[in-house]
Image (cartoon, rainbow, N blue to C red; front, side):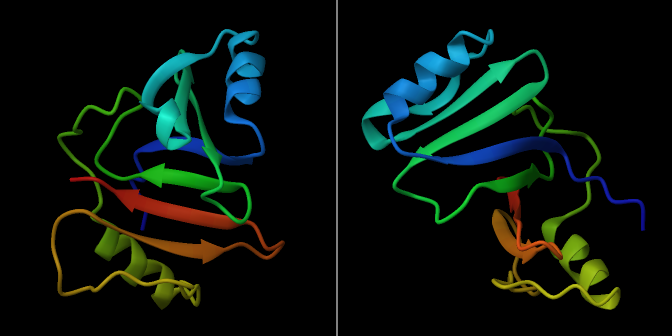
Amino acid sequence: MNMKLGAFSISLNVKDIRASKEFYEKFGFSVFAGNLDKNYLIMKNEDSLIGLFQGMLERNMLTFNPGWDSNARALDSFDDVRAIQMSLKEDGIFPQQEVDEGSSGPAGFIVVDPDGNPILIDQHL
């Protein structure tokens, strides 16, 4: 299956969200979404996205958003998170946290790569 995973970002576990925000602004990133008072921001530079999360993640993780482009606009065509999960399971990759394959709408699951890096497949539609 050639998966349509949607927008890609790196989600970072940061110690000081304000310091991280200022740091990435020096690379040309600006706030795209999120809420500084709730300790999370999505920063954007062209099509590059970085999520900053203070006190929310155990580790940094890769994030894919099926159904969204890099501007969080709905895509006309995408692979549903449940279809992606089923395909990965068929290939021997089993999620740490699964989505109910009988459900519909927004959902997500996490898999871990061979080096222990978590990958979040997070569908918002």
